[in-house]
Image 1 (cartoon, rainbow, N blue to C red):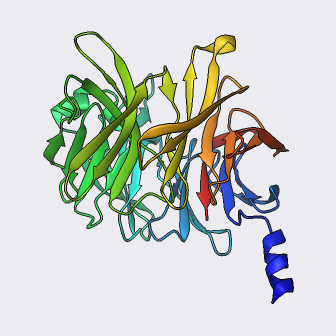
Image 2 (tube, rainbow, N blue to C red):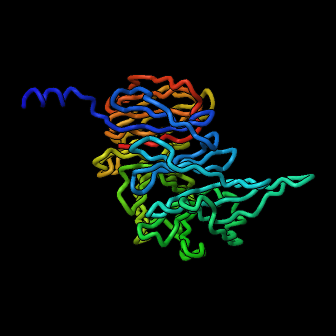
Image 3 (cartoon, helix red, strand yellow):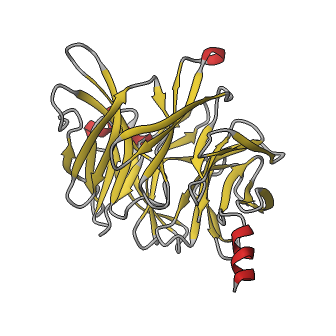
Length: 355
């Protein structure tokens, strides 16, 4: 028994798998325990644009750029089990926000079309679409409301579905709620009317976190006082069923932050905060105590001008990646770089961490 305990203690803590899209048409597979690339999954529909984790955590939905393809990856076998294209003839489908239904049978998405005519390209109106995975096609289309159409960013806004599958939440300057039956708006959560005095113009975006509590969206927000124009940064928690948002101010805002990713026990979260741009950009890791709502520690680091950020499945490593061919791994406790992996490919999508 003592020998077994010693052997287990010697094993690396992280035991998850990383998936990230790369040029020209593949998913890279990286093992967290060995911190090595262990394979790749070829894609038939071209350069991957986005990766969405299924609700049952057994599949990945991958969208591609050129052919507006959908590929379904089985995580157990790491193989493509379904692949199809949404483009037809001279009509190109451009997808925006995408969210699977709770049963992972359809994808809800915002989209528009671009059609080639003899002498010009015609851009179609933005609309809601339902993509049936089994039928491999769009089975429903509903035009945007006039208000949504006038908001140019609506078609690219992140989406979340309620646990019962009846409603979609679109994250814009406010959170607009739609019925999944007819995509008509049913309610709006006014982020400009925050729960703490004197603050308005709240900006909230959800992250992609495997440890997020079911039925909730935890994210970071920036808000500005309309009188003295003081900006603050904080943590927001949206309850998808109660349709309430709890705001917890943390500190004066920086120029920007990059997501909020939780440790498995949901007691601590990490983000990257930055100020400045180009060669003058300053980046810091921030560790947030989610119980007290305070910054537990922070550390400046040298980062490239463009990158994305994620946390490991055990919460002990921080990943910087994208806009290049290297994955940088930092120790979450010391916030110092411990390894750099050359994947020998330009990464084109966000990274999905599978515990």
